[in-house]
Length: 158
Image (cartoon, rainbow, N blue to C red; front, side, top):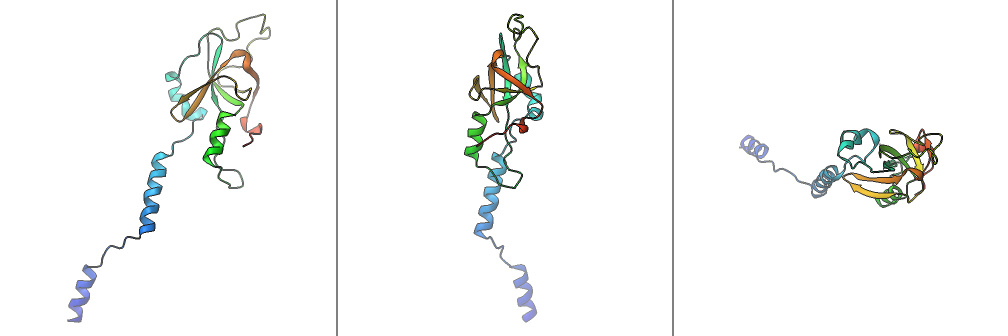
């Protein structure tokens, strides 16, 4: 009789659902579905042709996106990251308008930048254009202040 009882108990073991574990799994799925890679020069290349072509003397720039985690392991709040993206002063040149840097009187030494350069511009310069996964900026050719090889070498304060 005991053997029969044990075998039925083994078959009828209820599935234990821990509320917190289930909630954690649901939140994790939501976060995974919500999270998208931030735009950077490597991930945006396939969609560059779909972005607007700057007209005249304008330049299309992808603003620098800071890392979400510091080298010390501190995770930066999303609000701070958004504020930093808006106020950034570095960007990656995606496209250049047909008349940019063609005025020989203003640019006797030639263009100040080319496609693929990291440039520095004024903090709130240009027109911000929201796109999926971030934003791009359209700058005038004379708003470029300089070029740099690594945008992380310029300090970005939160």
